[in-house]
Image (cartoon, rainbow, N blue to C red; front, side):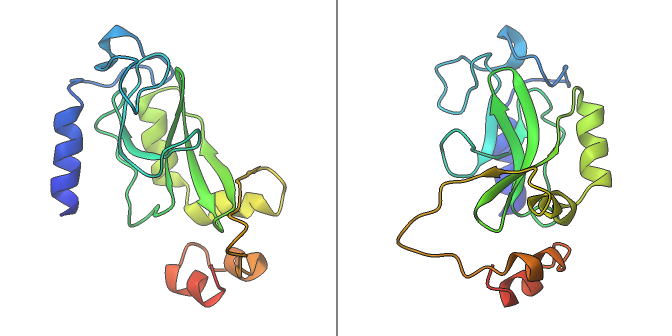
Length: 161
């Protein structure tokens, strides 16, 4: 199923090579009217929830760079106009940066050398953006406990996250 989704995402992204990740434009492969397109025409595929902090597994500017759903289950490319960065949703209430690559090679390096746990450790440092929390469902996540899990999903679940 995962391979099917990725191949579908790649089929939707017709860009043949990697361009500078911070520039979209006409050769980015999409029009600005596309629902997942940024202002400059950068398109995301295999995206999560819609909204200003939508995260996508792949972008039209670097179609060969995929955010691995197993290694980075809560991370993806965030497209804001012509700027593309890699962010992680941490503890269900914060958006933390993994990095802002300027090229596809830099995006590949970030994904190879970083981890979701490292990105989420920034919550304690105040370097993340607070996400709106649904008032009907209070968080039971113990952030200190989860920070020690280093990305282990089972451990995070035992912390209530």
